[in-house]
Image 1: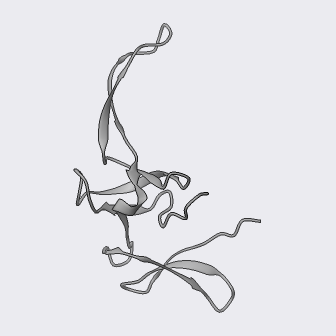
Image 2: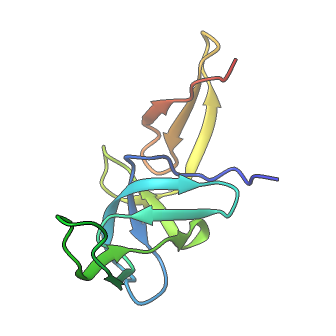
Length: 113
């Protein structure tokens, strides 16, 4: 069963633990089934790649590795502070994500049909 992850793609997050603690980065992808998040410039690993085909170049590639979703915290765009996410329902029936520190709306949650 997939776990609901509190961050989305394109969110800015702060890493809370691990070797990259304190770094900020943009979320590249989210995998709810394993509760893992891929953050730009965080948890870099090296991969040795063999050239496949005539024109592809091989060598050592540096790429991001996934981080557990519990180790990142959303950074609010308005106040710039790391915050928890509150889910609210507005008067017109829209569901929104909001910042718990400054109480500003982060974005609207789109419902799946």
